[in-house]
Amino acid sequence: MKVAIVTESYPPDVNGVAHCAWQTAVHLARRGHRPLVVAPAPPPGTRTSADGPAPVVHVPSLPLPGYPQVRVALPSRRLGAALSAHRPDVVHLAGPFVLGVRGVAAAARMGVPTVAVYQTDLAGYARTYLGAGEGAAWRRICSVHTAADLTLAPSTVSARELADRGVPRVRLWPRGVDTGRFDPALRDERLRRALAPGGEVLVGYVGRLAPEKRVDLLAGAAALPGVRTVVIGDGPSGPALRQAMPGALFLGRRTGDDLARLFASLDVFVHTGPFETFCQTVQEAQAGGVPVIAPASGGPLDLVEQGRTGLLVPPGDADAVTEAVRTLAADPALRARLARAGRAAVAGRTWEAVGDRLLEYYAETLDARAARLGAAA
Image (tube, rainbow, N blue to C red; front, side, top):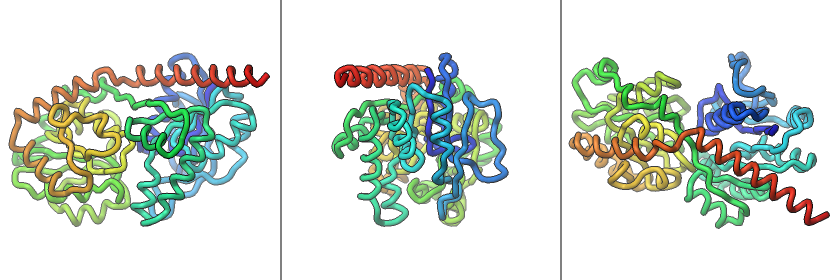
């Protein structure tokens, strides 16, 4: 099968859309299919890997004003030319909003079915960054997903919200996690002594440092005695967060085995963003054997069972975050119990299993398209 992955982001970008698109291409190639990736071009001078799982066609792009780490695709004929040359059986739209809209239109002209993967709460971002535009964002989201043959939502909350807004043909497709890379065995006592020389409880956040992630909610926890807060990631909120949490360690962006070692060396992982359609870092922390604290909203509701695989707190509640950290910092036995249950919960959520489910969705979409054409004939 030939699949064109039209994605709003792709490595070397570091975010959920980019990582999922990469894993999709890897799985397709591993199963003997022929993926092609179309993505916004990275910044000029960026080094990209030539040995990825699929050829990549880069569409001209510009940085998002105020957030240069995010690139927005410009109008270009490269998308249509790439699809025409590849002649895909299915067009996979990863987080469609700008480039994905053009991908839907190009696939429709070619008579090729589309599978659209909902990944980003852009309406929530519009509310956070602009204080307006939430309705316009939802209209755009609903338009592109309604035009697709199938929409895949990463969590039950996302699936329900899309269906409630009138998007048809919505199915659940969660994300996988590399349980070989993220492993409790990577816990590094030398690293822990370097990060917390006084033997403090290590509390970590991993992700973008941006307003919608609400990392500022960690300020109270960072001030707790006996706690050392570690912030891993970069983004436009970095300078303000350093001022708000002078005692925290900011390690910048980390990836690969280095990130996995940091995860496993934490005592508590806290995610603070309320707009997660899934929340991959929660799964990675659980795979690394770390108890998690997350907001009781969006994707984390599927990933964290309150009191068994982690702790859920009201979204946006700084006091609740602080109290949850205080509770886990004071109770090593509870941390260990949550960590064991969290690791067990993600044991079967491999990218291989998730990728094979995606192939089943492709097959269902192709069969449904063929049935409709047959009925019309």
